[in-house]
Length: 303
Image 1 (cartoon, rainbow, N blue to C red):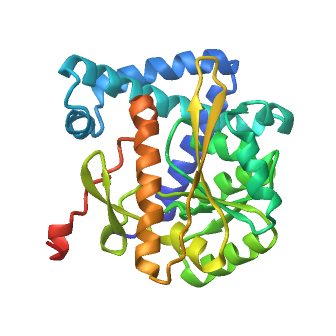
Image 2 (image 1 turned 180 degrees about the horizontal axis):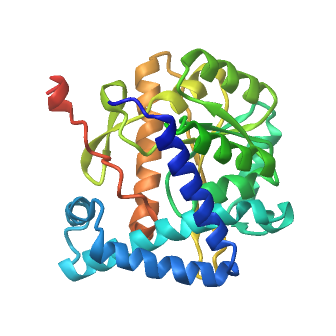
């Protein structure tokens, strides 16, 4: 991978700032409509990974027609652009506004695990508006989110300034030592530690079925749960027609049999099934741009 230059970083950063300035000229509802127009235009004119998305949807939903698959694909573009628009508006929104953007379908479960005082692993995904899900949740409960460092330092700082100013802490996953110390500290402080675990984890992951195909899934969240003895929940924020989010919350059974690898796999099996259920209900809200099935067992000599 070629090294990034300062000129590239500054060009991307100021282009993003200019886009944010443009977006701020409009109310949020109108900005969403403009974003929808841009998304549909991109679907037809600049179809980034369009063929990939259609192919993965066709494999995952063999019962759907090509016309249905293409409609879902177009809505995937729209959901992503609307998510970007929302992120741009975060600095303009009050804490109370962000808090009220989320409704919960199982708040009793959240209260139950929080009352245990052990901290909680919150497994989520690039689903709905994942940034809004985290920010809104953090207005009610203490939260740290594990994030990857952006290749552009200026954009990375801007994003984390938005996140920390609006409510939650970030833990970089790029440094293993800092990651484990950060997670241990957050759980000790009875925080929710959010992890988006839906991307391909390469050869370091554990293979579990996702839409009937093996997918390499990150081990980290399950490892933390087994190591620190804390509860695990899944939380997926579903975008509603009025722009708010509805968080679907479920609990994962954590078994500690003494066989760490099996315990980790069991947690990921449950997570993968819950994510698949959420995606089946709202396929246009998952980030299909990811190459979820990029790594396969045969590439590693496992079968």
